[in-house]
Image (cartoon, rainbow, N blue to C red; front, side):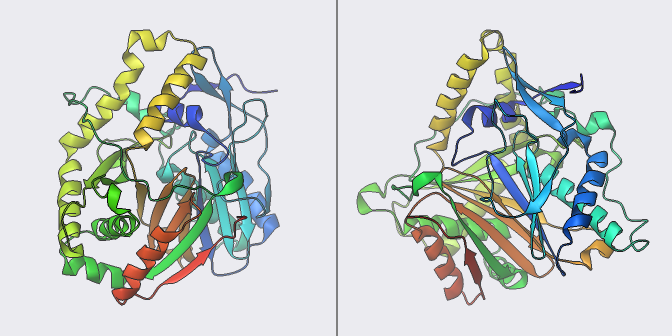
Length: 416
């Protein structure tokens, strides 16, 4: 029997639900690599313990007449050794299932979760709660005073912060952006994605960014732009190269929600004249800083949320809404060459950090998506890639190698 508790779905989640596919499953994976092999039985117990702290993850997505909604579920999570693809399909309308799964392999604990439930910030926090509970059970008494729970109330954790903070800024006119250059034409067969893990020494990359007087994100974002540019045929050189960067709105609003609460900014360059990496990185950094002011971020958030309050939209049946959302989402995706999500510096409690070697993650996509995790002296990029030709990743790695940065790259196998 299911619970009678139900929850509205935020507007970002509505877009994800309308656009879930076999390749882009609208799922993400966050992983924690320990310094020792994972004990499966202890991990199973830890997951059951963690959902007591995060019952918001124990929900089923249901279809209503006007919108989807979520309700509590008594379905228990399972833990298994990793065997499925990264970022698997975690929502099927006709199937009773949880919309997250925990797997392990060697020293690695993986949390795959549907983006409808939460964003990257919420996913990493849930993973850290699982890891802490695992370590508490593995080493009784050692971490009894350590906590990761923010102390926020159930209501605050479950808050639709888009709705809560809507209307804080004067709306800005929507910008008209051209379709961007997409660096691949032929996609991998059978709805596959290839995943690359690129590991770099943090201090080496930071040194390069500081030499150019730009942020780490801007330095690597400029490198991604150049890597895409190198794949452009001459006849398409006038098309813009656009990098989309998700922004954690909790940095701008007093929110403790674990639901989706992010927006995106776009940095664009047209390679219509020669430009050096130094010049491009400075341009990228200036554009990013301009868009990340509190005023600009609030305007973008309000423009997005306005959809919910248009009366004709509210009364249209769900199947029509989903068709409309899919149409505009597809148009929007054509304006982005690559998505680059900086998940920031990972700072688990010191007692946990002593037993953790690294963090990493991936996000499903129909094109190219790169996450970035920073932990101690390691910078790790997880790249999801939909195309057969992997030239963009090769170019990116080559630029870093030429800069004298030591790189380790691993990749999944695909069927071609």
